[in-house]
Length: 175
Ligand code: 5GP
Ligand code: MG
Ligand code: MG
Image (cartoon, rainbow, N blue to C red):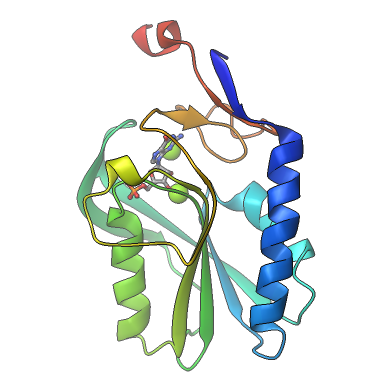
């Protein structure tokens, strides 16, 4: 790892804070928490344990046409939800918002499917990458315009299992 940007302790502390805020907001709402695969999985696993409210969760897998490092504007659903969002307070969990292409597509889709409300919680926000006007309702950390890995985030499927967020050494991409 070239640099550790966010330590395991910082992540866990932030997850607890987000959980407390979401408990307040959703305690009487029975939200549908939607994790976007695969990157949000560690975040979702930790965060839902810190939300002290009844909730339901489901998973969705989307992919953007493009290569590993740069997303294109087009999104396709690889695995859709098993649960209807109609009339539900939906809380989308993401690992990172970069261009915003993925989330702007999903938010539109959930509104089209008549969700009662749609909110976004992202662990990481990379505002410099933004191509779409989309803002998280809650964000754990703002990161610089660098390719980060760990805690769900991959580089060719590796590093998702790290408990921290870091930046890889440039040699790793040049191989
Ligand atoms: P967006 O559609 O906002 O550009 O980003 C969607 C997805 O691209 C994220 O959920 C994530 O899977 C991937 N992504 C964006 N930035 C990074 C990054 O810095 N590192 C990694 N590993 N994935 C990223
Ligand atoms: Mg993602
Ligand atoms: Mg990836």
